[in-house]
Length: 285
Ligand code: AMP
Image (cartoon, rainbow, N blue to C red; front, side, top):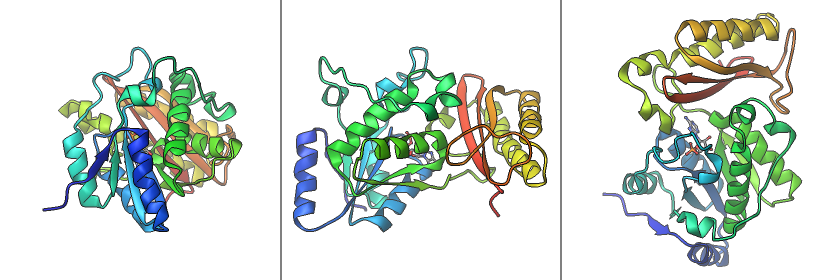
């Protein structure tokens, strides 16, 4: 049996634990999550362990990043399962604050990153990235880690966090981890649990399609034509498409015509579930 993981719920207890590690000269990495831990999250813990002596995983379903008609209340929560698998993966501490610890009465500060957040998921989910930027800034200030690890699954989020850390001079290195997928290509996500069996069968078409877009781009198809073909395929398969976009991989600036390096990003709805995914151009081997 693996040992149980220690859980702290207050900033004060968190800082006491971290101070002891720092006193012993140990380095610290942070893996922020909203729980419903799956192999994608665990891959980030593994990456973090290779980067630092101690790994903190945070579990906080952040109300600020959900829209009023989104799934905040339905979001899967299972802390005891999460604690077990995080311990087995070698995380040293689970930081699971209550909302009242994170946002005490009269909380009134917002971190807002411009530019990068204006379109793609920012357009489809107003205020989402302000919520993400605010909670991630708080987590970084609460933990003061040497490194923090985020998944490429949320590619726009990863760039937003890199930008905010640079803009606000937060002393931490932000690292991205590759997307972990099911055997059929579907990117692991806590939200996959919402899919009906029929939707689950359709869901891998998202990855197949954006890989197809990336392959077309690598063969010289223009960005607009490749993205349009991708949207057509997804709609034909039954998805409601928020966007299929070909963007600069560092700035997310729109690209047109033939491209050398790019990122293909897509967001779709399948029934009541919103799925996102992205792939690099040129495609992975
Ligand atoms: P979440 O709990 O969905 O907020 O995700 C927490 C972290 O795990 C974020 O940095 C995500 O990008 C990352 N993540 C989620 N799914 C995956 C995946 N399939 N592969 C790699 N990282 C992931």
